[in-house]
Image (cartoon, rainbow, N blue to C red):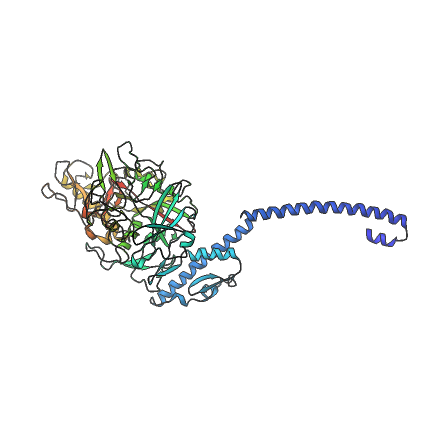
Length: 613
């Protein structure tokens, strides 16, 4: 209206001047408002840019999270498709024949056909967004297989490990160590070759706490003659990514996917296992009990190193706590973002044992380094003796050989320096594995993980939990019409009958549990009982009638390793044997303990990485 009025009265100069002044005033007003608005807009845009630069843009973050989640799901569904095809075609399906759009294999999923496709069984990104391309590479690349020495398996998972504190380890022919940045190592396979028993090694080193780790790729296994005492080579088929599809495309019919590669609900492409028994950030410390290694505390950090005193005289609950602390700010890994460290379980012990018993590993020699000196029980990591079944050798003995010497490497699970050490001899290693019988000794496993002698629900994925026989109750089982209890001081024979019966029930339950190197690698067990009536003499026994002349009778499994089963007083598992066990020590050895701190009880952590940890 203003402009129309001005035009209509173009000949009235006075009127026009007035209107023009009004127009100028109003124009000035409009300019000021525009300026203010402009400033506000600039501030908003600047804030948006800053948010974007700081990677805190909630809209973009939501889009990225959705894309990452969708790609992860698509990747898993493609693996499932391949598995189904494998089953339908009797194990003859070739994954490399999978080529085309995502929707060709996952009907209805068409929204990504313009930027994702399948090439020779692998999901690839074809769009122009570099950030999305990187995400796809992270999701697909970290679980992709490599072919080294003619063998396909999952390459070491280096995802989410801090590049500043993590290095890949290379060993030359003289057992001299060098390191690689993990960004370069992820694209290089020269530092491992499982076909030739050369396992992948890394170390993490944060805040001075260094830990060496060995990669165990996801696999399925088959034992031709289980539940015997005769060792055999275990059949191994490596699997692709987090799937149950063999990396070479062959059938896994008759094979068992090893349970160590399932953590809670998460499927893993492999696990990182501590290369040596755990040591502490003060390995030379002599604790109040007079033992060297660290003591019963959570104030120290875990290290995993050769040629140091192992961490013993620590209760099992504290073992779990310090193992989990490795992802804390002060711990060796230094981040809990998509990483997890915990005390090794029986199934994880079994994963290493079965791989070393295959054509990809070797039975390790004992670590015999053991000495009582000045009241300190000293055991050192990464040693071998003069023979496979060597007994204890004192500190300084001429026949002790370090991890990197000709004899020393024979104490690893590969027979060379790239394997896992101390799994035979050294210390008995407590695993996070227990008989769920309500024993008060399960209380040694507290520190937040145990309540009322039970593992809390939120921590169950960190433990292997075994069901006892129906007869075993807290406080003892009953035998005979007289109601003789397990724990009374009555007749030795009746006590032994009870002990044998309840341990036999526990051992029978092992039959349904796979991959743990228990039932599958033995044909019987021993229990702990009195062997002379009316005395305090105790032995590991296989029958119920013992006397002082016949003594103990120890059940043996593969490679003559001990198979000893616990009960209400001894609910926790220990594995591997110690320096005094000779031929009874080994990767298939099993024993039991009460969980309390003791001079011969050590432990070993495990490191896993993944999107959903």
